[in-house]
Structure formats: C-alpha cells, structure tokens
Image (tube, rainbow over the protein chains, first blue to last red):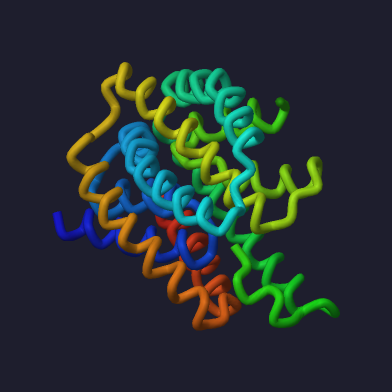
Length: 132
Length: 111
C-alpha cells in the first residue's frame, strides 16, 4: 500500500513539474513495485490518470490556458481510437506489450532530453521557466 | 481529427494519457504555444483515460483499489510539482527523469 502511495506522489510531482503525464510512471511502477501484469498495469494506470487530469485541467483553466472547443473535440474524437487501442493491447501478449511500452519510455526520455537541449540553444532564457 | 484518433489509439494501447502525442501535434499542426497545448491536452486526456479505463474494465483488467491508491496521492503530487516548477530549473530534473525512464525500460525488458 505504501508503495502504491509512493508511486502516486512521485508520478504526480513529475507530472506537475515536467508536464509528462503520470501514466509513463504509473505503468512501470505498478509492474515493478506492485507486481501487476502489463495489461493490468495499463488498465489501472488509465483509471488513476482520470483524477490527475481533472485537477490539472481545473488548475490550467484558471490560468485561461484551456481551449475548450478543441479539447472537447479532441476528447470525443479520440474515444474510438482509445477503444481500438485497448482492444489491440488485449490482443497482444504481455511480453510484446511490455517491450513496446519500454520503447515508449525511451521515446519520452529522448523528448525530454531534446527539450533540455533546445532550451540550451540561442533562445534559452527565463521565458522557459514555466515550461510544461 | 487525426490527432484525436492517434492519441486515442496510443492511450488505449499503452495505458498512458496520450499527452506525449497530443502536445507536439497541437504545436506542430495547429500552431499552439506550449502552455495552451499542455492545458488543452490535459482536458482531452480526462475523456480519453476515463473511456479507456471503462473499456479495460470490461476486460477485467482494472485494479480499482490500486488505481485509487496511486491516483489520489498523484493529485497532491501534481500540486507540489507545479509549485516546485516556479522555483527550480527543470533542466536537471528533466535529465534525471529521462535517465530513470531509460533505466526502468531496461528493467522491464530484462527482468
């Protein structure tokens, strides 16, 4: 139970700090620390993301950053894709899904490094302080 | 429309929000600035994750108690993270987190 809470706090801090969603930490945390299978970890991660997204949206909305029409359109349009993605995940074996997820983690890591390198470029400055 | 479909597929397949797909595409294709992109992406993710979790529930894969134990503390974590963001440079944290991701990926595959 304390491991679960630790995963949650750590993932939340990283999400708030870097703007990387909680899922990319929820899933490996649930697999490596709580011993869930890859499918169970992904499913559980999706549910855990919901409260984080709601509170995050509420906060960002107060800053006037949310474009409501686009968000609604995106959300509704992605439902079919999400259903297909879940069906595809459940059609794959845990091992294949796990390796694909590992590749995703490396991709997100590369994205982060690229962002840091970009910030070090000619336009680096205080304007990036609240990046994410 | 393409962004939504791609993001949904990605989210459902990997159990993540889909932000790492939505944010760059909103900036690249629709000309969003980074702040509006992350904020709008978060709002869309709420729908996507809720729906994906419901479908996974039909497969019997969702561990509700674990989701609550992980998800609620994460809400507190987000507030702390956003607070910290105003006070320290994200540079080293980004690099450290990237290293943690790569190490966890290796652990997942090699275990």
